[in-house]
Length: 367
Image (cartoon, rainbow, N blue to C red; front, side, top):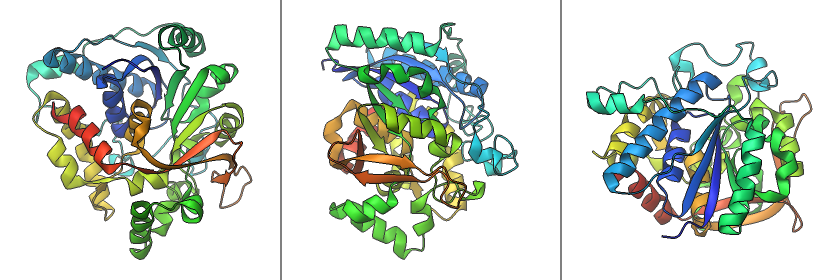
């Protein structure tokens, strides 16, 4: 398959980020040209180690598949930000101190015991050092924008799946970037605008199960019941992003619940392939946490952003509009308000093809 676009990933590499990275790195339709590491699901130093581990898995999987893999440039984004408001508001600091409070585990990859599903040789492979560039992300991304235009004739696609602090350094490149993000929570917009039967049916199931609060956001423990994590970490940066970039596609928190797969389906997909066994190891903690909170789903947060970037045909329903982030100190602090606007810069995705989602997961995890 011909490479259709160049992709840069900005990540706070936790468990779902790792799957998103594997989807992009193993895709035959896009070329992953760079990865910048930011704070969020964990400290940046842990994120750097997690990204290294995932890229080593991708490289080895490509070798086993007989597919060429070009290592993307790696660089360091912002340190743990003073504007990490979601966690400052709790009085806890960066985040919960115990494993049980953190959906990604203390190390960001579920504190996985790789010895259960991986051989000693495979465990050595994942910790092979990969050099990081000393250049600033903005310099590297500007260079990648130029190369993308020369090679593909298109803008560089930036997939941002962590807090949006790091995007502030590339605002000046807004005309050269197509932005795909996992962030925000558009539950009221889903209720007002979505006509997709599957989407509206799934939302009703959550509502009938007394889970309306979950649809609204994933930050109630931080005093932000209407906020989504990546917005809540730096709401001001999020607002600047929504005001500045020309072409934004959003996978929001509500869609990740609507388009989730069951834990049983994910366990089946986590096959005996190298990638599948690696993902089984790191995802166990998140599956256990979901069950602990009464759920039986695997929310495809960041992986959906990667899937949409690789194949926009996966989108079944979306709407053009503009987004405002609530910055006033009220219970709605951090909420993202989507307004329909035919001249807006943001496309909110309300539905994706389940068949295409499953096909992508099978290709990534079972080959």
